[in-house]
Length: 270
Image: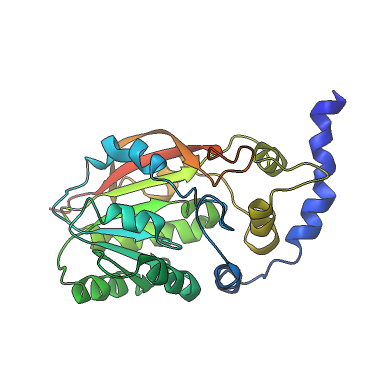
């Protein structure tokens, strides 16, 4: 029994680390991305595995998305998924809350890619217009698909509802939304323990997230139903997913967090 309870000795350290995180989410995310030195499998970003393996696991689900439409990667971070999506859609637009994240995504993308990036608070009332303007600048007009990975689980209920509402004009009649989120079944202590944290040691990318970013929650079918109400959205498919982090416990393989995926379309209004 003591072995099972030992992980709870982490709590005082977790409290100390998280107490220094900025209270304002934008400040927190901008500071985080401004401090990132490297990304990928050996980098500073917990959720960037440096591999296309996770996306390959989504390919069958992404077949629900119209391949003739562009795709908007919401919460793109350094653009790792945006660049992968750009190989499968006419254009991929990555949008992020943090200007530092967008700057890094542009730097890592370089030239010769069909990906572009823009700063956008997806929960703000003008988000749909910001996305439309950015797509128009890339020569794309009309409906778009949306890809969301690891965003909704760090928003509160109001933020999730605003995000879903703002995506309605983006997808229009032809586009679809694919989302994949962490849906870990245990407590925050169980969560960080799952990723290798102990009383004496916390992997550096995990510690950086705890120290500087808002506390994540879980996002599964129940949370999706509240954020994407049936009056506005129809569910095409959903189920379990595997969210990969950069390697933590084994330098050769990403660590995996239990997750949830869903594909949705806007309800036709006649």
